[in-house]
Amino acid sequence: MKLYQAYNICIASELPLPELMESEGKPDVIVQFGKINDTRETQHDGGNTFQGEVAEVGKFFIQRGREVVIDPVLGVEEALLRTILLGPILSILLRQRGLLVLHASCVDINNKAVAFMGGSGWGKSTLAAAFHTKGYDILTDDVMPIEFVSDSPIVIPAYPQFKLFPEAVASLGQDTDRLSPVFQNSPKLSYKFERGFQQTPLPLQRIYVLDKGSAHKITKLQPQEAFVELVRHTRAISLVTNPQFVTSHMRLCSELINNVTFCRFTRKPSLTDLPELVKLIEDDLAQINTKDFDQKMIARVP
Image (cartoon, rainbow, N blue to C red; front, side, top):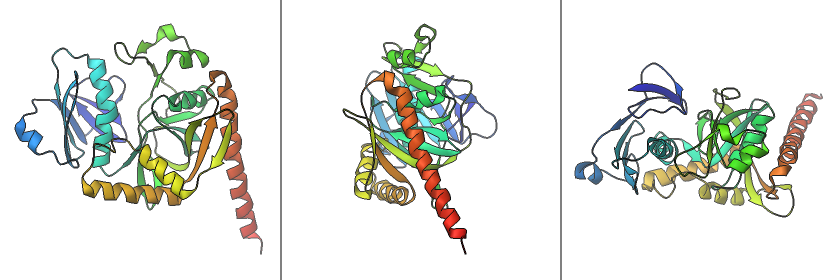
């Protein structure tokens, strides 16, 4: 087994995971191949013990946030197996470890985590990659775990890779011919980067919920709207259905709403507007920082 680092945990895996950074030390999670028989299937409780199957890929057994057993279909492509493991399977495992796991990409802006949340194909990765191209560090792409430390939400970094459509890669000035598909016949390319990965967890400042429209605009969400969007964009919410986990999930969503601002970010579907979108976010966050500074100065006035 090789040791890897991702999501602030050490993973020992029989399946090679070249997307991740290699690590050393005592593993927190073991990923191994094995047969998933009737005994394991009867242990499934939709919470700390989970058994699932992906058609034409294989069966997966995930237990207590510490163990993943893979029973692959004969001849399945390793790259496809890795994609399922690093996405939906680790999302379940991270939820078992007590984290809130969102469908979001996350960027380091002024030492604060700023997230873009939305469904598949909504432009999360493309927008985060646009920030990366401009020199910002990246924490997550697609799977964003949040841990609460003294009631403060902290984003846990993932690993240095984007999954992008070819036209998005080209719009960012990258050579698509130098990149490989995420897996065979995948519509997306694997864009691994060596620089600009934020490896240290950061406090979460704001979540932008992505939407499409006829104009670019940012509007603040009310708590009720934010709650609906959080539930809508929580990873593996339809899979981890144990009542204890559902109750915990609702509590974590409420805590997040109490500590983080949510905005709806409506954009026109145009890749040529990416620089404008980055500037719009930068200006919006600058207003927050200005208000915070003004409030601190007022507080100091005798």
